[in-house]
Image 1: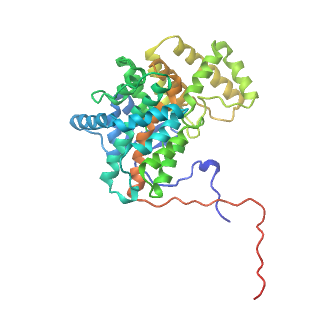
Image 2: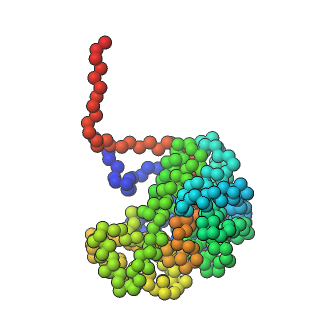
Image 3: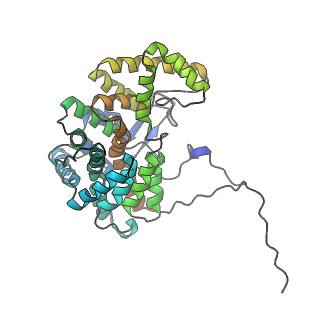
Length: 376
């Protein structure tokens, strides 16, 4: 009898990787051989970006050189600015804008199978670096404001905030967003990363693989949850209402955004990290979020005592991004700014030792009708 994969392919190993992985039972994940949350606390986004692409953390000179390369690649050419004017009128969401624009970043994008590693790597940097400029340009056009040109002298996180808001962010805001971005670059074979690898496995060009991954990220069960977590905190308002609000949602069969995870059976280390960032920023929203978290967790665990339920990254991501000045409608886009880096690292790895991904399915429909040929 054919072996049947678990629903959602949960726990099924489909490839080898040295990019990193998640140890859900331990509440731990890493990039290469480094603790990912420690990197997010102590290193720049650019340093970790280079680690994922090249396998080693850069020294100071290497980090500065890579940051200059990324900064220059954030600057869009005039033709892309013109196209953004049209996309800004037609695309109604940030993911639709990104899916429309990514294939246009490169002047030439042959199939990845026809390129060598250095050529593919150069493409990943050019594409991932352009994402903040594409998304901020789309957003500011949508709200009736002119785009803010990329500033190659700023760091990637700082320039993302600057391009979004048009203001100079504070060092605290920049560090908060950089911590979030660094902590969400990669997270095992999640839906969007797996999508990027599947498309790459066909030999398709890199923009195509990233566009498909961006479409996967747009779903509320993946990258679309942070804004919904903030909606929940605001809907509850007073923490004393949290338990009753949660029970009402559970009885209605609704999902509680920001809680539960497909992999973690111990605390989500990203949630712990971002809770610390939020608490360092302080304020009424943070105090309410902490109190609401405790009530919601207690209610969920009483509702399903057999289940292991933890707060996931989206809950405090919503608080941190809001406090740092990221517009709510751009939370998922901010996730995309970081996760595209991970997609690129996985695409490079997939292309280096490629085998097309071609799983099988179990047919469960009616028995087929066979055609009977008459004898000649």
